[in-house]
Length: 157
Image (cartoon, rainbow, N blue to C red; front, side, top):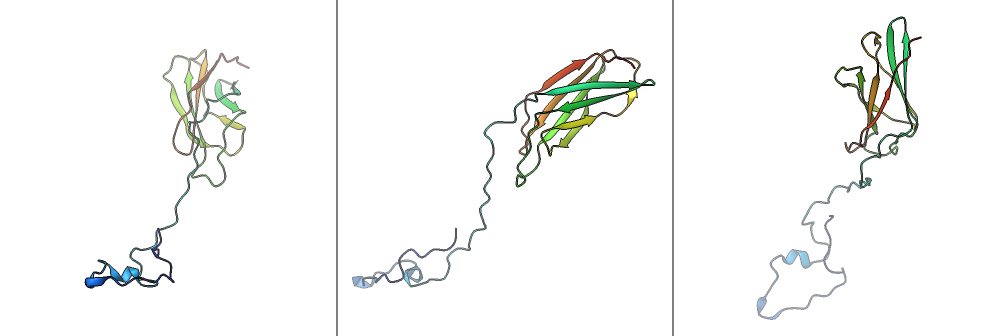
């Protein structure tokens, strides 16, 4: 907080008998020297009370051409941060091809609109019968939504 005068400038102090004085008499004078440095501006952070809602409006498609497949995730209800927020909302995507271990395919893509479209790296088609995508939203404070999962069975073209 900035230094403050504790009494109005026109305040008339009464003389005290027997020579009694305050411990810091300079503070009782008009416009005393500051006894503390001014504080920096306060930062106001308005944050939602809860993490983002789980993803909804998800669509997972697989395109397989000439033995190479890519997964495409489209989200239609994506949270977007205010322009003055401390950071963007992120989308994290895990993909599981067939019986493979789920792998983090997208560690954190920033969202700028309410529609999000993402395509995976190409991979060989052989060896999987289903593809499972797990999607999580992350808010600017690092809080994660609940997982949303979609599984499809690709059809070769």
